[in-house]
Amino acid sequence: QVQLIESGGGLVQAGGSLRLSCAASGGTFSSYHIHWFRQAPGKEREFVAGIVARISWSGGRTYYADSVKGRWTISRDNAKNTAYLQMNSLKPEDTAVYYCAAKRSGYSTIVSRMDYWGQGTQVTVSS
Image 1 (cartoon, rainbow, N blue to C red):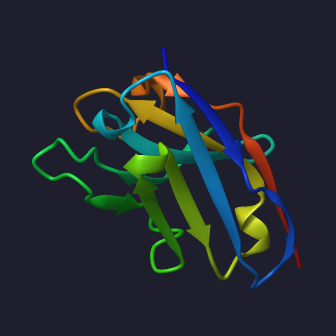
Image 2 (cartoon, helix red, strand yellow; image 1 turned 90 degrees about the horizontal axis):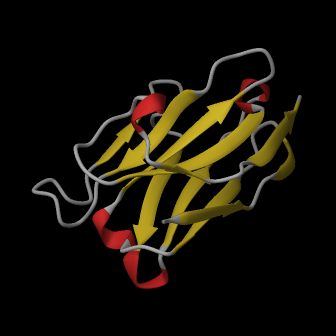
């Protein structure tokens, strides 16, 4: 059983930056595909960024939603069992609860296919 704990959320002005962290325990972190999703009030949870497990043939490859491409960077440190989401040039529309998710095999960005979820961290961007 993998446990994921997000941190790093908060209130920031538009144009600012935040770095989210996702600390994992209880499993072999390097073998999981790691994703960030977000959910704004009244909206469905949506994919933001993902990074493939190192053991995969495309290990380390990253994927981004169009809305964040070029502004944000997902990374992972397998030695620390932690993934990160560096968010630059934040916009008010980025306001949401951000969730870290892990998937064991078969890379996917579909919410229902994730195996483990964190509790979420709130990001609020003021205009």
